[in-house]
Amino acid sequence: MRALPRRALAAAAPAAVLMFALVACGGGADSDSGGSAAADSRQSARSAGGAQAEGEAAEEAGEKTEPPLTGEVKEKAEAAALAAYPGTVVKSEEDVEKPGMYAVEIKKADGSTVEVYLDTSYKVTDTKEEGTEEDEG
Image (cartoon, rainbow, N blue to C red; front, side):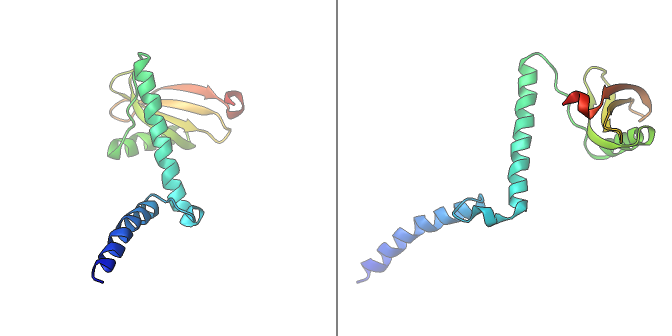
């Protein structure tokens, strides 16, 4: 009779591991009830993976990728760009075309975008108008 509980335990352990793995990655029969936070994090992971793949494809095509700004540099560059051109920051990155410069893309209230170039002291040195949202679509 002792062998029966051990067999039951041996059979239950893999099932428990499988259930844990399904719950941890958001899978399973009730995956829709995982909430929007889980879906958002999965979408973010897919988006980040897609952006990384695009960057790798650009490098393979001979184009240099522009690393995104982070931390205090990002905050200061975006604040300086927004002070000159109010709107919403689309992205901020180091500019590989102009070494030692930062580029902040801003979507203005009228739907057009402007790329604002700043030097390392966060002074606006140049801009490039990108057009309107309707023109780009």
